[in-house]
Image (cartoon, helix red, strand yellow):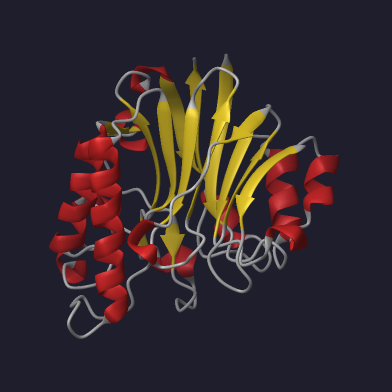
Length: 262
């Protein structure tokens, strides 16, 4: 079974329904995982996605905030969710393909602006969320699984536009990078994107604050596709659709793709 998967923080699925439809039409991934849908499930524009062949949808929604969804042309079964760090946020959902592969879709908290949990509650929530992810995958070791989403951390020096300048900026601080590494190690996860593209700058997010995001290119790789070691070698053809950041009224994230032969 071969399939292509994409992950995209859409920053409101209702506001950007046309962009999701554009991606589904032009790129036609078999599975699309969305984060920050900012919508209850019953308010999602599912009819438009059904019309494009994505008749299988597993989602957890929330009015105005957070929310994750998995759209699929392939049959999928709802595989549950967890409220990591007991935040009461819709930040995780899982679905299982007919071949037994489980797809976890995550939206890790951004963490606010100050990288200090004593001064910034949101940063503490982010670290707690990551710690519970680590513990969960340590005690329930995954197999035949793919983990995707906006993990809100750019772990490598070449995952940000300026490593030295961003060491004290939330998303690239050493404490966050270490925490994400612990999550990866706990589940034996392999970074498929960097397996395919091992060297060089690679970004999936560019701030709205930049007057010319493309020319400035001050990006970060916050969006990830991982797989468990038992299926990691089946992953290939990784890419980031940078052009989507320049679409009309875009998300500040670009979709990340990978294909799997399983």
